[in-house]
Amino acid sequence: MSSAKEAILSATETLLWDKGYSATSPKMIMRESGVGQGSLYHHFEGKPDLAAQTLAIVLERKLHRLRDSIFATDTEPQDQIHTYLNRPQKKINGCQMGRMAYDAEAMQIDELRGSLIEYFDTLHELLFSCLKSLEHFKSKSDEENHNTAWAIIANVQGAFLLARAYQKPEFYHNAITGLWDLLFGRKEA
Image 1: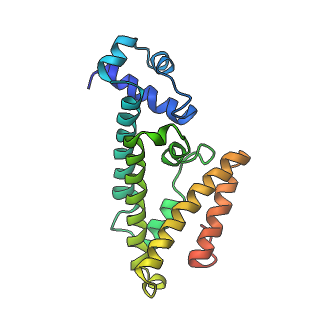
Image 2: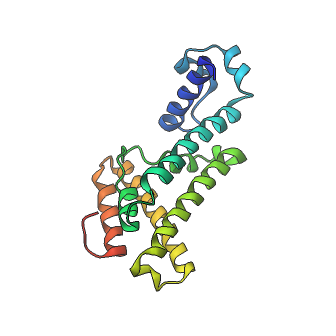
Image 3: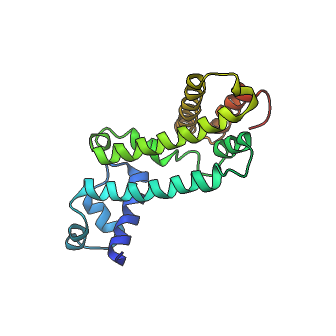
C-alpha cells in the first residue's frame, strides 16, 4: 500500500471517530492526511468508498483482537466475558463501531452497515459461546442465551453512551458492574 493511501486511511479513521461520517468531508481528510485531491481520488472513488475501506481495516483489527485476545480459548469463559467488559479504552469516546451506527448518513451505505453487522454478529457469537459453556447458563435454552448475548452488547453500548453523555468514565464502570451483578451475582466487574 502506498504511503499516500495509508495516510488517507489513517486520517479518515481519526476523523470518522472524532467527527462522525456525516461531518467528515473529503477536504478535511486531505488536510489531515497532507495529500492532494488527485491522490485522494486516485486511491478512492469517493467518500463512501474511503469510509468503507477504512471501516473494513478497523473491522479486521477489531475481530482479530476479539478472537485472538479477548475471547482466546485458553481462558475460562467467564474470564473472557470479564475481559471484554473491562477492556482498556477511552470510555468517553465510546465504541468505534457503535458510534458509526448512530450516524444516519453512514447507515445508508450498505458496505458500512455490513461491516457493523459483521462486527456485532461476531461479537454476539463469541459471547453466546461463552454463555452456553458456563454452568449457570447451561440450563437455559439457546434462545435465552442468544438473547443474553445481545443484552450484553446492548448494555455495553449503553454504558458507553452514558459515559459520553455525562463525560464521566465511571458511568461506564457503574453500568458494567450492574450488568455483571445481574449475570453472575455480586462481584466487582
